[in-house]
Amino acid sequence: MADQKIKILLVEDDTFLVEMYTTKFELEGFGVVAAEDGLKGLDMAKKEKPDIILLDILMPKMDGFAVLDALKKDKELANIPVVLLTNLGQKDDVKKGFEKGAVGYLIKAHFMPSEVVDKIKKILKEHK
Image (cartoon, rainbow, N blue to C red; front, side, top):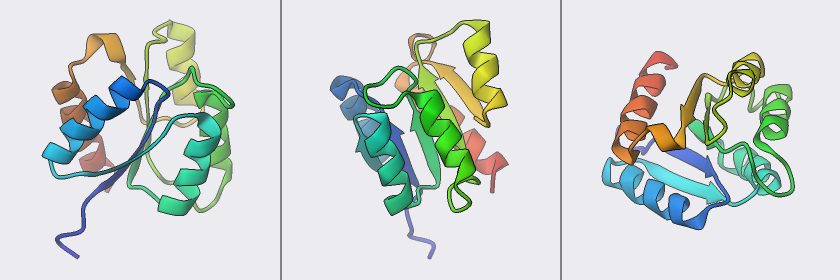
């Protein structure tokens, strides 16, 4: 079990960012699965049972807040830590994210990918 990779689900509609974050996390030894919209993200969460979910808010088909609501209502998925990774930085959005159950809120423009990896490692340690 020690060689089991920590699995991250990245729900993001920007393919460039998906590739960049996937590469960064894989270099750090994580397993990454990705979905390009909210509905696919929810399906992937059910199938993959990731250790943590990185979730964009502004996405096609189902936004991140709706995905977060659905995750928290599902008994099998409710305990998976969710970090919102978005460009929405308004106080109301941040507050709403935490109220809906997110354990972290990262504004893409404020963090380099390596900093995001470090934050995710820290969050995973806190939620073991």
